[in-house]
Figure 1 (cartoon, rainbow, N blue to C red):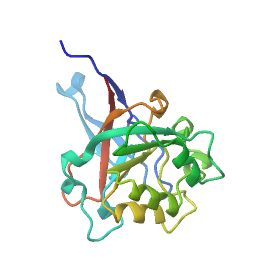
Figure 2: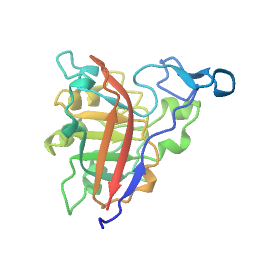
Figure 3: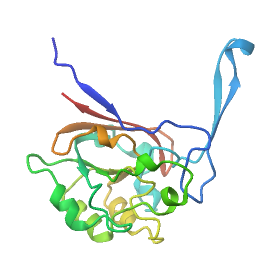
Length: 219
């Protein structure tokens, strides 16, 4: 009998009017068919592709970059680790030194998840929407040198909202490293533990990103 695996769901539940990027329209999930009336249930979803837990493909900021449907399945899975940075935030920036300090020593992750605790603030408040922490370009360059496939965060963006040039996005996506944003439940993971991360975005032709279901699997 195979050893059972524990699967962590790192996806925020998609809801009508859930908090999204401040300049984006609120998503709406509405029932169109109801079993009691129609004999079946079906819903209509109106939302941007970057709503809720989602993946940024290189094309999001790089004109010649891959769209979400062009990312190979093998590149959406890999050895992963969480970095618990909840006590390391300086204003709206995650210090570069903190990422290095929390990097796993026992293995080399292909996918790294940055835990800030921000998902616990998920609400339509100014603090959640505008004051979330992100990484600066030097940290993005450092992650590029670690040859990772992808990076994730439990905030609305890998750049802090104050970085209107989206510099970390451009560094990472420009090197074919995808980004997961608005992750949830990162506090169920343990720093230093090796996980298999599975990022499964919708396969939308030509799209700059897509809503995703994300899992961390441990044996």
